[in-house]
Image 1 (tube, rainbow, N blue to C red):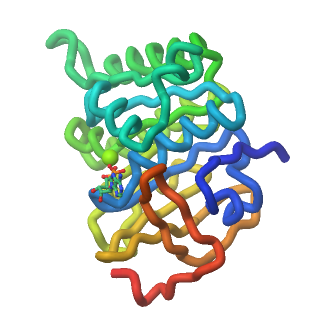
Image 2: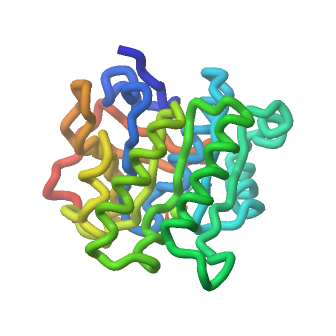
Length: 236
Ligand SMILES: Nc1ncnc2c1ncn2[C@@H]1O[C@H](COP(=O)(O)OP(=O)(O)O)[C@@H](O)[C@H]1O
Ligand SMILES: [Mg+2]
């Protein structure tokens, strides 16, 4: 089986070599757990180490801030952008007219994202974060809409990471309680001050480690320690 190495130090070891290629994986966690850093690093390392172009789709931040945050880790994204190895795309949920429906808007944005992916022949894609959809959708519609979204993303030929912001409790994996069912894998991040941890909760098609591990955010980004386990009871 082909795998997409995340390039995050320590993480691929927990995944038995990497994410099965072409999967949709959800990264969940409360605010400030490291979702945006982890997913930008996935694209940065992918471009730099594995020569795989990547597209970062943001629903939350603006492009300038995301670039600035990446640069604060000394990642030279400017040259990757110039080489066509990395793009940031701002997905807009602002309706173009009163007639436009949510389905129209999503369909329009999916076309744009596909264009961005094709443009640089991206192999990695990130959607940060799906939590924004909650503001536009009835709970009953969320599951179908997210399912359709995940399904469409699969046709783009990338290994995709979506993020979802959770309440800061250890047994919630998404805001809506449905995101984890429409994806092939779930990686949960936790922040129990002062300790951060990462846990591979689900990954279709591969064996994976089943313990939470320490995660640190340092000057060059995130790393995970696969050799130290965190006791589940130590996570709040
Ligand atoms: N250079 C750094 N060194 C150590 N920690 C950092 C650094 N930059 C950011 N952080 C930590 O990362 C957190 C933000 O991570 P982020 O990925 O944006 O979280 P999320 O997307 O899950 O809300 C900050 O609150 C801070 O604690
Ligand atoms: Mg974020």
